[in-house]
Each structure stands twice: as C-alpha cells, then as structure tokens.
Image (cartoon, rainbow, N blue to C red; front, side, top):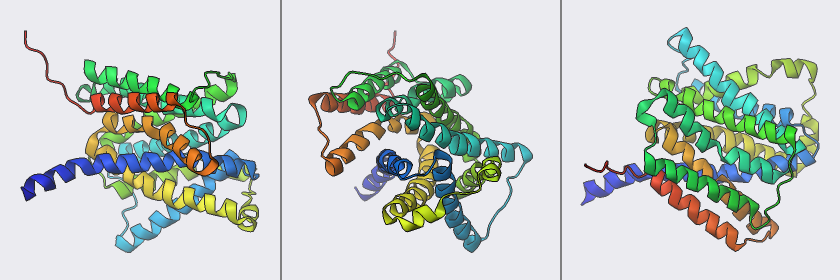
Length: 306
C-alpha cells in the first residue's frame, strides 16, 4: 500500500500547493490596498516588491551556480514577454484599477481569468482544450465567483476606466499562462521565475527615470507598510511565483489557472477573520459552485460510446 499512497501524494501535492498559493494571493488584495492608502502608487508597490523578490532569487541562483541566458533568442524573447504580461503590465493594471473602481469589481473581473485563459490556451493547444464537462465546470465556477464577491449585495458600481484596467490585468494573466507552456518544458522553475522578475523590472525603467522617488523612506518609517511590502515581496512574489510556475508545469496551464477562482473566497475569509466582515449564505452557495466547478474541470470524463 505504501507505493500507492506515495503515488497519490505526488498527484495531490500540486493541487495543495496551487490552493495555498491562491489563498496567499487572495490576501494580497488587502495588503495592496493598505499600501495604496499609505501613500504608495501602484507602480512603486510593484517595483519594490519585485526588487525584493528578484534579489532573493538572484542570491539563491548565485549560490547554486547561475545560468544567465536562455538557450535561444526566441526563448529569451518569450521570457521577456512573461516578465511584461505576468509582471509589470499585470500588476500596474490590477493595482491601478483599484484607484478607479471598487475592490469588488476588480476582484470579480480579475478572478474570471480562468474563463478567458481556457479559451486562449485551447485555441493554441489542442491537448489543453476543455471537454463539455470541464467547460460547464469553469462556467459554473465563474458564476460562483460573482456570487462570492457580491456576497449578497448585488450592486455593481460601473467605472469604465477602472473596469477596463481590471479586464486588462485579467487578459495579461491569461497570456502569461499561455506563454509559459513552451518554456516550462525546457527550463527550471527558478530560472523562469527569476527571468519574470528581471524583465518585469527592466520594463519599468522608463517610469523609474521619470519618477525616481520610490517612497522607500515612507515605508521604512511605517512598520505596518514595511511588513505588508515584505510580505508581498518575499512571500506573495518570490515564493508564490516559484511555486505557481512549478504547479503550471505539473498540472498544465488550464487546470492550474482554474484555481484562481478560489482567490475571492480566500480574500473574503481573510476579511471575515481580520476585519469582522459578514459572510452570507450567498458566499456559501458561491463557494460550493466554485468547488464543484473546479471538480468538473479536474475530472476527465470518458467519451460516451455510440
């Protein structure tokens, strides 16, 4: 029985890590909002958290013997695109969205990423296409996300600019999930993640030239802001990106990305624990829809014989 249990654990581990990563990312909405309210801009938050993450990964890579460049210029360009879509462009659009629209709107739109990612990835890779049951599952999970985020308050405050920025973040993550498929088969996870941080920061050089003040002194003087920033840089960026890229390699982009549906669930649970926000029956129903929808996505239903 030991080999069977070990095999089951190996299959279960990527799903567990995916859940933990998404749970941590759910908390980052609160941390980012606190930093924005504390006086930092969306760009400053992204740059500082990615500097922290990159330096940590660079130190680790140097201790293990660093490999600087990809094996081909095509792969290096792919790494650059990953850094832009999964780094600078994603975080700038997501963080900026919260300045123009509600956190509810941002959370709903960004959390619908798996729906778009599945369609985009399926258009390029036949092996990643969802069958009928899996498609029904991702649609069901999407409805669950809306119910969870609304939490009984079915009122949306439309903001064209803010909602467009949130949708831009959603599409950025969908393209990140698509672009990482080919390189994940040829490069170690730490190498890919370090490249994402490097090119994410490199693409922000024009902003740094125009706005050299990163408000570092403001963060240092406020322990609460510093703690939130260190959490975003060390845990939510460095550790979670390495873990997530490993999960993408093990589960496939479509199945892994569907775990993003759990993001608003963990956000609201965290807000309930820390801020005493109310959880309604709509939240529970929505969570059940998300979990059952994800079960359908992770289940390969055999084709019915004629």
